[in-house]
Image (tube, rainbow, N blue to C red):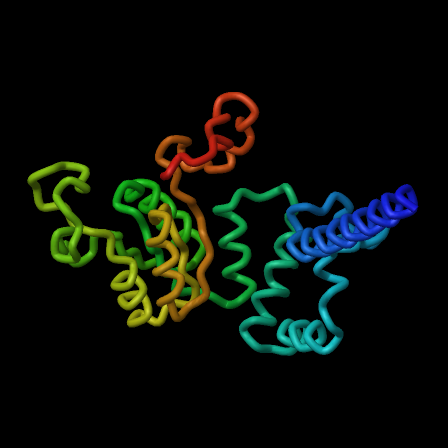
Length: 243
């Protein structure tokens, strides 16, 4: 009887443990996203979708509703087709500068707003020349527009780059509003700070694309930190850095 009791107890423990493992697996499955995918079957459908695939979890009604946004002659539809056309026509043949021009041409954008970082004003001047050569009408607004001191919005002197001086804050909302007044067809971000670019995109009436993504350490190539994360930038994997 004693052995029978022990076996029953072990079986109950085993069943409880298996139920817990199943529950944990289901929880893990729910938390998985595209970053965990190794198949990438959504691209060409040459294999099978993983069990946690987001594509498989989308109901037909939602998929059809979103796909319909890319059909017809709405701005969303024209942008989607123009982007695909530039990719398909010039894949690996054009620089980002040239792709923006090709894209603008395909959506009929002539007035090009430039929301630029003051630290990239020289690059902006060059881009302006390129746009004009291609028959476009560029209009640039620097990030320091308005010259409002950082202290006016509660930023302490200790957080200024140059302490004890007038140091204008970045003003992406005003950049967007001024370009909205110009009724630009397409706005291009040139090196706005992390977060400031978010505000600009939020308040821009015109569609927004990016020419330069700011990275002060890596010559505006933030992907370089990921390329070298196995050696030079191992610190990316340091826990609890409290940045």
